[in-house]
Amino acid sequence: MQHKISRDIFEQVMVPNYSPLPIIPVKGQGSKVWDQSGKEYIDFAGGIAVTALGHCHPTLTHALHQQVDKLWHLSNVYTNEPALELAKTLCDKTFADKVYFANSGAEANEAAFKLARKYAYDHDPLDDHSSDKNQIISCINSFHGRTLFTVSVGGQAKYCEGFKPIPAGITHVEFNNIKSLRDAISHKTCAVVLEPIQGEGGIITADPEFLKAARELCDQHSALLIYDEIQTGVGRTGKLFAYEHSGVTPDILTSAKALGGGFPIAAMLCTEAVAQSLNMGSHGSTYGGNPLGCAVANEVLHIIDTPQVLKGVQSKHQLFVEKLHLANQHYPLFKEIRGEGLLIGCELRPEYQGKARQLLQLALDEGVMVLIAGLNVIRLTPSLIIPDEEITQGMKHFEKAMESFIAHEVNQVNKNR
Image (cartoon, rainbow, N blue to C red; front, side, top):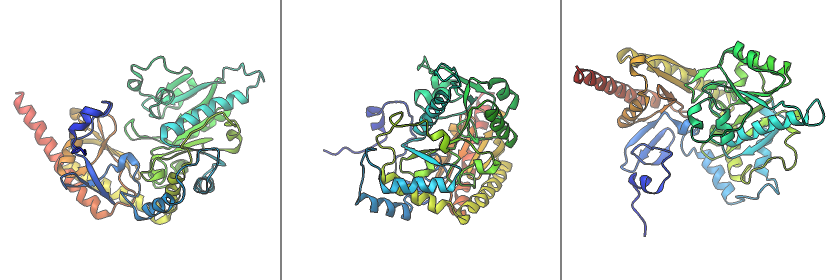
């Protein structure tokens, strides 16, 4: 017997770690989504920077359909053609010499952090593996995933509540504070982990000087520099990977989200020297390098890494920012609009702090999907190829939500008088 699917069923059968919005989307095409009732939405959320080519891009669906009729899964007892092609493409397009495939950003980061410690272990100057060179330095307000290791490396204590004891040997420093990093790093440090733009932390861009200092300090202390590009990678900032903006090259880079355009896949990229420490049997993933995901990701890279798409990201950034500033003149909600490419953050003014989710809900009511990054920032991560007319249309919906938000706040003030 088939049940009628409604939002109420979530409370009955799903673990309550999420609190999804009241609608259930059932169809997506490009940058538009429709719910069960047929209501249309403009998608400025992009599945949290995942659907970088929109929903059901014809080239991606064709690639998936072709691979579905060939080969689904083998396990890592064997390799497969799509995985080898994808690894070769990633190496050709980046600093990397070697690639490890996983299924999610957290898994890619888990592999990166394990590799950093294993590399330090393998290169113990005492030659007896008694060195205490295992410290991982991350930044306050960073986010690196939800496994116990990655959530511990992440710099948001709230995500560790109830899960202690957490892995040891992790230190957090102030983002963009060179002195804070310099004071923390030492011969005990095996890796420094950075996001070129802090995503969950509020869309905060790393200063080029901070990135350069991190590279220099890692070199001085024989530590590895890891870039978490789960959210910034694969075209999101107008470069294939965000490290290209600063010219600071990491030793390890992690990618996921947009890499599969919606199909779960992740990758850890690294240099030849570092890769040798992830030797036979030291790490693994049952589904890592799945032929289906790799076939789709190959097409994602071929489409995104083109002048047309990457230049388009910059022009669409300008259009979004112009529309946001104009809306903010009419309804002054935001104290700052920031970000790079199509990773945009709008921070609420002090009097509206803590109410980002309320604005998200009002936007949904008006027919536009947006995200939050913490309690105070509205985050926009749409498709990299969203048509300009849909940006304009979606911003009209969003401006109506801003108007409703202001009206509600005024009413609340009047009630409390």
